[in-house]
Image (cartoon, rainbow, N blue to C red):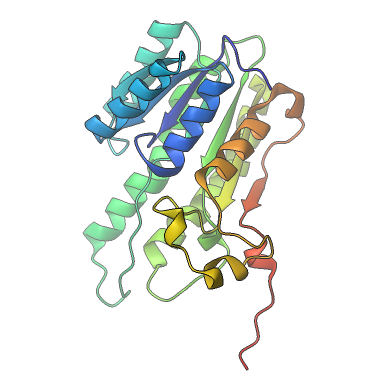
Length: 249
């Protein structure tokens, strides 16, 4: 996969999965626009890419704010002359009893995790449709869109919404040669991988917990022009965890 002369925007690229995605695109020759509300972390990701000989631009962005998103896309286009790919990764988690979850907390989750995906996709697509080749959007959902634990209602709702929004956008943007897909990560360890226990790995059919690199490679696959027959799907990347039958002895 060669992404030379292509521009990718990665939201939430200051840390974790987003950072891993940004670094992988840079390794493949893409010009990477890093969007994050965390200025030191976002700038650090951009600096690392530049140190490795890549092109990167950090734009401080609060994905809850429509004006910030519009400015992000305008800046990316003015800097590089095109927008090819968007990875909607920015988000936050929330675990709280539904008896205690406030309307304000619910709205905060919706605005951060779900509304931002629509707004970023809408604004990026306005530039992607100018390309002869169109473009590609990948939305980072979660396996919590299809399975649950207690007290994750707000987070699950946003991730389920992302999956639904993905196929809706795929239908609307297909005429402009823009593919839209989702990735639902399972357990992706963004901390100290060495501290994981054998039991953590063994509960996966793959025999290991996931890493940001696993999601990054999936993003590359879904945005490769050779794979433009794929659109509207939700690719579950979870080491087989959602397919493992569990019986309590």
